[in-house]
Length: 321
Length: 306
Image (cartoon, rainbow over all chains, first blue to last red; front, side):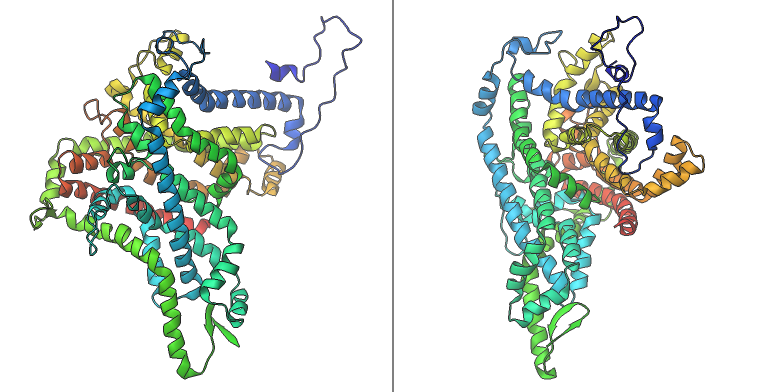
């Protein structure tokens, strides 16, 4: 076990070698933020042994549980059909072939699905940014009559998860009251319901509330209109929360399954998740696996790029319903 | 020139002009609100009201709807799939809590003590959360394949007999719990980790001076200090897992013999397989009432946290 040899003195039977260094005094652990274990506990010989054992086994366990399935997916799709079905399986593909990926791309309409999803996510983001930011600004700074009632109504939707109103929401989108429009199989079916998100309103309003009113009043004295104040003063200082809301909105559209399954049933309009799922019975498993890899690339890339923001947003808005 | 009234942007003017200004201010504000108001009205408030209405109507969307009182609810309750669906949902929630609630906290406790590889471990534990759920679920469908699937091959490797995973009544539900835990674990872990970092170090030092060992420090310092976030996450997880749909929909179709049928999936079946939106809405309404109880508790608690 490498964890033990790290601090173990050279075995007595080992031939003494001039070059072998004497046991180095281990560097003490940094005492940054105090946690459950005391620095004293950690720096004792047994503490170090246990620490390294736990560290190495945690790293190995996490890699096996969270990374290995992804490795299995990516390499599985590189195998030929024969090798793919072999028992016992090969852990490294004997030859790398991208045929399954090519097949998935051409046979499963993946480019269409990906473009659709991109379109839905971009539109949902744009509408959320425009409508929810304006609404939160109005509720926080302009404070119209009955503003509190409206705010309560919007926050009350937090208590009712979208899944339980799936059917009436579907019927609404199928035949929007008053205007009598059928939004099924149109991007509007994703874009507009995405705006009706009480959590966005909550996050944005809470942030805007913290912006000192005096700052805005000064601008108002100088003759700035509310729109101009929102654009030139409020938005620039609200970048962190706008980032959090943007990421939530885009990721939600990308991950959502039940809603697009109902409202976008036309194979030409499906999202990537629903599209792949709809073909699950007709595709060979190798092609299917390749499609899964392709479907996960966009979100993994986003995660690599915005990892810090996503994790910060998670804890900022971590109490999400 | 301006006075602040409860934080409002309101220019002070002569009393006569003030009325006109107030109207204009309100109009501007409602202009800003209009987009979100329309979306909330159509896609959130109206469907909520409609769910209640639909539950008590017979409606085929061709003839005018008829009020049928409790008929829809009676139909649904007498459906032989009704109680299995609720039992499975409750069982799924319970098992998902055992795995998905205790494990992330334990992981966060360990990660918080580690001084190396923190970035890697946090990245890796959150990786599955970033996959679209449909991808994770379909990936596990392949792993669960009794023949060449990964899980049975791993069992073979250590000379254990393979399981039939999704095809057996005994293991189907737990198989769903495993997928669900795998793909959702990261969120809880990172939230707990953030909460653990807010625990003041002096408390641990004080506890140590009082002779508390490691476990007692966790029990008497860490858990009390993070209990609100623990409670909030408990409620959130109950709310989230009671809506389980994608796992049975993609993995088992509710089978074998209703062993994995969930309430939301039954609701979906009523609407889109039996074309009975009344029955589906009645199920949705029941679930809504159950979840509102948990949601109300969540909102009460989370107000104290944030």
